[in-house]
Image 1: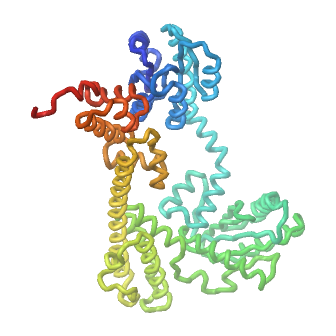
Image 2 (image 1 turned 90 degrees about the vertical axis):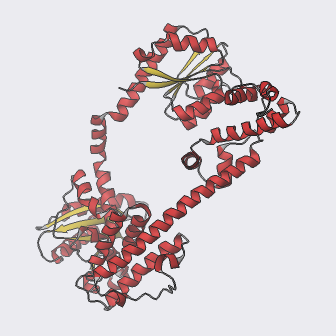
Length: 532
């Protein structure tokens, strides 16, 4: 098992040296990755080292140990803190307990005492790590969660939120058999409202599970919305009407057993699992007819709209899938989505109403993508584009697919270039803000992010990626450069320069300056300039 990382913080050098040398770190299961002589320095080190354990004194200059623990608790939520102090002060102990400090030790600290604390701490860390990594425990929890995960998966299938290439694999993981030659969705709605809706939905699901045992049809009932849904898979090329009749019997049972009026909408069957959202949409459309057709029965969309199952559509799920591929995928993923979409056109004659409508919806999706990203349409569709591309310009599905792929790749490239430019502009705005406010002691990443309207976590990652430095390191560099210039070009007192550069504590300013330049502010000012 990997050694746990320790950061040691104390303003007394002899204590740091004593602890670092006397402890058998590796034997105790730890490794000392860094030392700091004050809380402010420890904050900067913790950002880079991400320690598992922080051993810190309470009384330190610039930033005390309890404040350090408070800040790091937010930044390193998994870290453990051991606090030591030369003051037997119960108030300190109470504050430490409130901040979830693991142990509070009084100075002087002996090696055996600290070893005992670290041994206990290692056991706690081991237990937490084991609990997180215990495969058997995870397996049991997974099995306990399977019913919920299956219902969530079925709902995602109906809503088109499962990538087609993942459906079979995820179903197998959840121990669900979705094999078949055709699939259909049914949505069950309990008419009226009441405070027993959740209980009635559970009873309805049970009715569906017990009453849908059909030869050549496998049904899975699950809670969905304010009622329940059924995902049916059919073997062979049999009729859907036995399934519809079985659901009609459920409606009768709901009235008899539950005293509830139940209406069920059934969508047209589809021959590919990824087309199940269309069947679900058909079921929703069927339910919309209940004011005309009556409640307390099954309404099959195929009876009311005979072409509902055969209609060629480019719907919200298609738009969501294509948009995700353009924004997040690579060329291969975009190609796969485009091939699936244009593959539906095979067997549909160019110039027909369905072909033209499908193309118009596809073009609308591309326009939304481009306009949503504020792209120049001429860069996507070519100079002089007026939105009058005709479906008849593409004699085959392959020709339309090639045109669509090229536009998707153009949109993707322009969006990525835009993101890169945007990141650069954001960092430049951050640098300008720092230059304007570095003299304020309250300058922080949180304050800057309020100005930029970004989350601190995202900004910190972005800033370091672009500049190669953390926000704290960049601010320190700006302040030190300003301080150095003031020391060389003015007679202003050091404590005033410190305050002008954002340091209320002149001693801490001197500490940081010496760490940055290798000499104190006084010696730096006295040193001759280059070339003198």
